[in-house]
Amino acid sequence: MTRSIALLRGVNVGGHRKLPMKELSAVLETIGCRNIRTYIQSGNVVYDGNVASDQIGAAIDDKFGFNPPVFIFTAKAFVRVAEQCPFQSQADGNPKSVHIYFLATPPEKGVEATLQAVKSADEMFALEKDALYLHSPKGLSASKIAEKADRILKVDNTARNWNTVCALIALAEDA
Image (cartoon, rainbow, N blue to C red; front, top):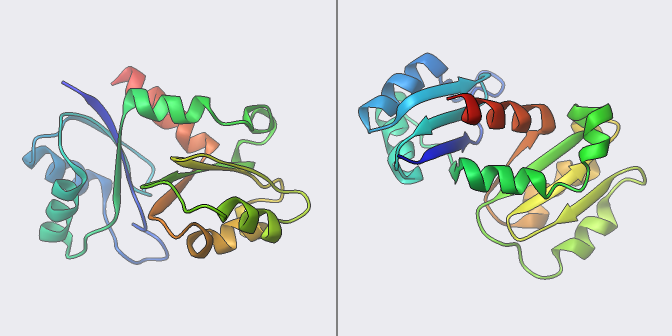
């Protein structure tokens, strides 16, 4: 059975789109997910099974009345994306300063130049076909890239900080 990691975008943010992780786990079990583990309340799930993102979205919609964007990776693919992060040494000193934006599809050409034009002087980024890696030493709330990422990238995405990425990898290895 495949070990997978699901990232749900926009759940439990500011009191909206509430999705208790215990109830989410129960819903996921009904659609074939096994050995389910969640991490914090922001929609991070490790599970065994071959359940597709549209199945998860539909099950959440049936139970909770909304269908969040769901990004699914095999544990191996998730680790590969994390290993490609060029800011791992910065993450060692300040893990909340490094974020990975997981991209549903590759961004259009020219995005990198636009990101370069809006970034703060202290920010660094690297853009790949499946991820935007961001180092923002002053935090995500001060990031000019984070502020405009959706409008610039123009692809479905969801971001996680380095702490969360590492915790999900550990959960996938321990599950």
